[in-house]
Structures are given as C-alpha cells and as structure tokens.
Image (cartoon, rainbow, N blue to C red; front, side):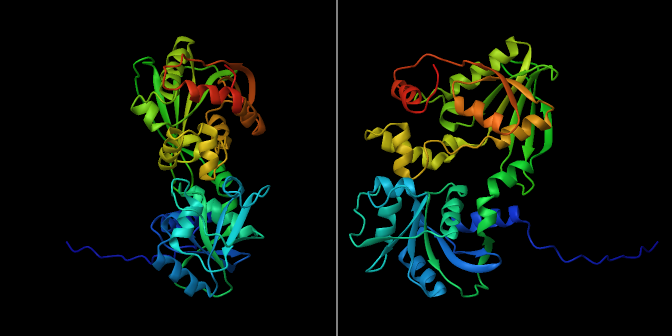
Length: 367
C-alpha cells in the first residue's frame, strides 16, 4: 500500500519576543560578542562585556560604531574608585583612548593595575544603564564597554534598551508551573517539588511543598536563595545550608508549608561573582563592601518571582521564616500578606561569625 506524503507549509517564525531577545543578547555577550542596543527601534549604542574586552574586541567595537569606546559602570563601582558619586550609572572616557588593561582595572577590583589617569566622567544616557543591566543579567562583572552610534548594524544581534531594563519584572510575571513530582526528603518524607519556568525558557525556580498546607490560613513559608557552596558543599562561610535543612525540618514538624528555592545565587550576583566577593573578603572586606567593590548593590535579589510562585500555588498569606526584613517588605510590595515574621536563627561556627555580624549590623537582619 502506497502512502501519500503530505507536506504542510511551515509558517515564517515571528520575531523573537522581548524576553527571548534578552536571552539571546545574554548568550552573545557571555561569548564575547558585540550587542547593538536600540531605543524606539533605532540603534543607539554597541555593547561589549568589560571582562571580555580584549584588544581585538575593542578595535572591532570602535570600527563598527565609528566612535571611541567608553566604560559604563555602576555608580557603586565609580564611587569606590573615587571617580564619581551619587549616580546610578557612570560613563568613563579616556582622552588617550581605552586599552584592555584600562577596562579591566576599571571593572575588576581584583585587577591590581591602577585605572588610567586621564579618565573623564560623561553623562550616562538610558542605554548606558541598559548596558550595565545586560552585564548583570549575564552574571558578569557589572561594567560594559560601550560606544554611541547611529550606524545600522546588520551583522549584530539587536535588543531594546527598554526590554533589558524591564526583563526581571517581565520574566517574573511570565512564570508558569512546568513540572512537579513527589520527592521524599530526609526531614520531610511528604514533600513535592514544583518547578516554575519563565516564558523565555530561562532558569527555573523551585517550590518544595511539604505536607498539606492549609491555604485558607497563613502558610508557613521560607524564601531561600540558592547557595551552591552552602547548600550542596556544606560551606562554613555562611549559614545557608543550616537554614535550608532547618527550614525543611521545621516546616515538616509544623505539619506543612512551602520553601521557595530561588535561582538567585550570591544575593543575585551569580556564583562566579560570589567567588570573587569571597576573594575580596579574604583580603579584609566584609560581605557588603565586597559586593560594592565589585560594583553591585549589597543585595541584588528581587522578590517578584517568589510572589508569583506563591500566587500560582494558591497562597496569598504567609508566616515568613526569615531574619531579613527586606523579604517581608519585598513580598508585601507584591501583594503577598506577611502575617508574621518567624525567626530563623542558627549558631555561628567560627568561620561565619563576621558574615553574621555584618548581616546584623549593616544589612538590618534580626537575630
């Protein structure tokens, strides 16, 4: 018997959504590529990650833009360098031209070279803030080499500056439940793990639902940011592993609740940058100042993903296990009612005493 072969026309794919475009820009940036930024659909600047600024890459950027490269950095980083203060984003230009050594010394506090002496700050337009935001989303050092341009860039991937600045909010609001399974745990045999993924297919956040929480009453809840070193390896530099396992046990003993495991390593700066911060801590900086030296805020986490996950789980009111008032206000800001803050304290171990002291004295944690 002969079967006929029916060929259906394949529709032309739609242009990438804003979320997918940002993901593609992140991937290209991490590979050392140039990205074209647009405002209202018009190319306004080219971007290169500062930590990938080789001599060849700087030359390629300058030739494509037809303008000299500058460095866009956070106001935090500019302040610790003594170059500017009181600004969210700073543009730095060098009268004699930027070299790769100049760029790395500006971006990386672990680079021992001094910045070039003829640096001059310039007003930072919105696209400069977007360039820094792109580096943060890529979990790179929060500094970019940029050049203003009005040239068309047919060979480069293009992304909207406004899409970069709105990415975290848009990705959080697009979270959907994609999988769940029963996973008995050592301290909570009646547990299920629910995975949530944004619409662009980005990194998943997880919820560990323990027991059968009563959603008509405030649900005992813990927001836990992933910590590879503490959660998986048992690092003594922090109290994250203790807090993770302690929360699971406490929620189980209480009869039910939820632990949200958020993909926000290192207070939102990523694992590689957290290791850089550890190196800075080893030469004398505390947790907060190490982040500021790198150019980050002391805490880069956002809590909209947690609020969206709770809503998707049918939870609107929580008893929040935390020592961090910012988590309480972060959920309240996104319409999740925190009826009670439940302290979540564990003894220090000799290696994390300074870390815990900094949390209390400088970050406002309640112990």
